[in-house]
Image (cartoon, rainbow over all chains, first blue to last red; front, side, top):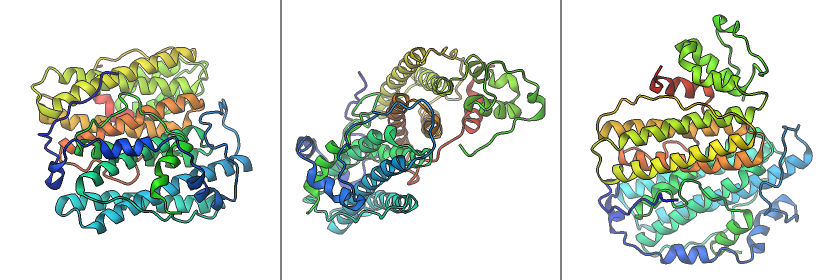
Length: 233
Length: 208
């Protein structure tokens, strides 16, 4: 897939502190290396709220329904689990941006952009919270989080990693969603996470489309393992 | 899809054989035809009519037409004097759209469908600025089109593929928007677009 965009440090969109970003694959690699470790701890964060110990959360696209079936309680339960999972991730993203704003590492236009990203994640939190209630569930509690916020450069790299992971997480769940309404909502959030990820990628000098022409999905276990280091249990 | 489209009376006489009149694509194309005239939306109507009752194929053909459009657009852009990121995006995004076309063609055939014919296009652009402006419109429209069609897709594998493509369209849109000095994500939720809206948006780019 020959679609890597070359780095271009003359990018007109790189304002202020973002110009100071140099290549430092450290945080991304460190983050990605965490994928694959046990996800049980992070899983429990939302499974507890679902009141559900069922761990068959990693099978994607296992269903190949050829006709739309009427909603059943099993479908409802399955969708609820996915929405709670998405809510947990959105809580994490929203809190991340709140912490970044509070860190004082950014100012001016950079800070405004970070605030906007954060407010959109908060909008996602609000929408998903409402959806959980609509499905008759109790919204999962926001996880206690802790992010390494050492300097502007590493924070932007972490932001890119989190957003790319979020986009992959939605993509991984979309084919599992039973309700057309919930799928529509998830898709409208999914592409925004993709936009965020692309924007942050260009800010740190990486391709907006790191997977090439086809974005790669991530399953629940992979995603939860990746965010586990930021969840304080 | 809560949006029910009612074609105008002159189109109601259109004979539709072996085709669900409520077909996702046909509905939107006919509605757009009521604005532009039936000839203008022929690529959509004929591809929809060519299908039996296989609406995933309808949707895939709708997506294929959009990807043909984007692919032709970036190819045409390579004739312009582009520089910097605009140039590298035109090349790499164009490659991605070509890959999308290939994937959709393969999927349509796999489902036993007949791929829509590739229309001829015309693009109102002559420099980097007009290229970037139109690129933003096309990519944002593509995102809305896939998001709008997604919940109607029945086959889960097709849905997964469409999701994987739409995320890339959204990433293209964000990168282009940044070059235009626009917010990469103007809203917290990308608005899904129905077929009628998308068809109306792109019909002026199809050569009659």
